[in-house]
Length: 256
Length: 365
Image (cartoon, rainbow over the protein chains, first blue to last red):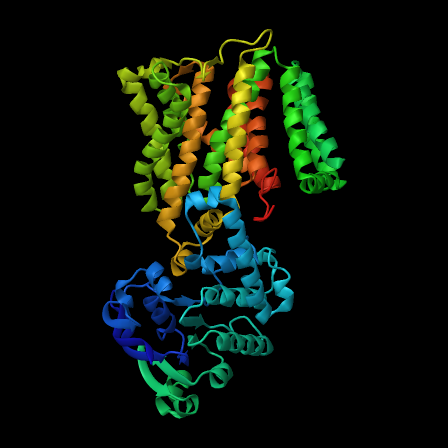
C-alpha cells in the first residue's frame, strides 16, 4: 500500500531549482534510502514534505492528505515526523521534556486543565514518563535512567537517540531521518540502526526514509534506495543495482 | 535545620537593611553581602540550605511566611520600610508576569511599565465607582487586552525587532497619557485607596502604618501569582513555552503552534502586570505618565536578568535589591540608573545565569 506518493514535486528558490519534478513513492512499512551528493536536494525534499518549504509545483499525497497544502503542524498531526541533520534538541531541557515535545499531539494543552486539574495532569505526566522511559530504554538503558538530565550534559550518540525517540514517541506512520550517522562512529551508527529496527518492529506499518552518506548503513537497512543529483532522481532500486549504475558513480565520483 | 538557619539569616539581613539609615552602614551591609554570599557559596553552605529547603518543603514555606510576617511586625509603624516592602511585592507580581513572557516564551517585553500603568489608570478611573476587587481584575484584563493588540506585530517579527515594537509601544503609551486631558495629562490623576470588601486599607490599624495593609495584600497577590506561574511552568503549557523560546522550527515540525503560545504567554504576563499596577496605584494614591516610562520598563527587565531568567525566587530577590538599594543609598540620588546599569553589567559578566538560576523543570516537585 502506498503511503507517500510525490508527483513532479518541485522546489525553486529564485532561479535555483533545488528539487526538480521529483516522483517518489514510499509504501507502508518500507525503509527507503535517499542518497546523493551534497546539495542534491535530499534535505530540501524533507523540508518540502514536512511543510517547512512551500513546493513550487507538483503534489505529495500522504494517505488522504495533500502535503503541499498543509502547515507543518497539520503534517505532524497526519503522522509524519523527522530528525534533523544538525541536532535540533532543546539543550537546556531534560531528556523527558525533549521527547514530550515530539508527543505534542497526544497531550492536553488547555490552560485550565494544566493549571487547575492537578490530579489529571499528574496522571498524564506519570503515564508519559513511563512510556518515555520504555522507549528510551530500547535505545539505551543508561539513558533511560537519566530521563531528567538536561540534554546539554549528554553525548552525541545520546542526543541522536533522543532525537529519534522524539520523532517516534507520537507513533508516526512515516519517519524521516536526516543523516542519522552524522558525527558518530561506525560502531555507534550500527548500534543506533539496530535499535531503530527493533522499535520499528513494534510500530506496525511505520515507513522510514533515511538520508545517508554512509553507504553501509543504506546497504544494511534499506530495502530500496533513490539517488538524487541536482534536484533530480537519477536512479532508483535496490542498493546493489543503484550502486552499479554508471550515472550514480559519475554523480558521486565525477567523470574521468 | 539548615533551611531554618538560611531563612532566618535572610530575614535578619533584610531587617538590618531596612533598619539602617547611615550611608556608611548601608555600604557596609552591601559589602558584607557582596563578599559574604560568594564565600558562603564556596563553603557549600548555600547548597546545603537549598538542599534542605528542597527536602523540607512545607517547613521551608512556613518558615518563609513566618520570617516575612516577623519583618512586617518589626517595622509595622514605619511608613517608609512598609512602603518599600509593599512596592517590592507588587513589582514581584508584575515581574512574575514578565517572566512568563521573557523567561519562558522568549517574548521580550520592554513595555512592562506601560502595562503596569494601564492597571494604574484603571484604578484611577474606575476606583471611585466599582468594587476594588473588580478594579484589580479589570486592570489586569485591560492590560491583557491592550497586549493582544500589540501581539500582532510582535508575532510577525523576531528577536530585536519584536523587542523594538514593545519599546515603541511603551513610549506611545506614555505620550498618549500625556496629551490626554481626560486622563489628567502630564499632571496625572488621584487614585482612591484600596477598599476590599469593606476593609479600607488606608485606615491604619492602631499604631500600625497603613502601608502594612498593602504589604498584606501584596503578600497575598504575590503568593497567588507565584503559585499560578509555578503551576504553569510545571505543566505541558510550560514545556510548550520553553520549546517556543528555544527552537521555533522544531516546534513547527512537532505541531506546536508558536503563535498560540506566544499569545498566551504575552496575555498571561500582561494580566499580572496590570493587576500589580492597579494595586500599586491604589497604594501610592497617584498616577502620572512620568511613573510609567521606558526607564521603568527597563527596571523590570533588569529585575528578571538579575534574578536569573525564568527563575521565580530570583524575581523576588532581584525586585528587593533593585527597588530597595537605590532608596537606601540616598547619596546616589539621580545616579541610581547608573547603579542599575552597573548591577546588570556585573551580573552578566560574573554570573550570567542570574542570582538564583532557574532550575530544570521538575513536574513532580
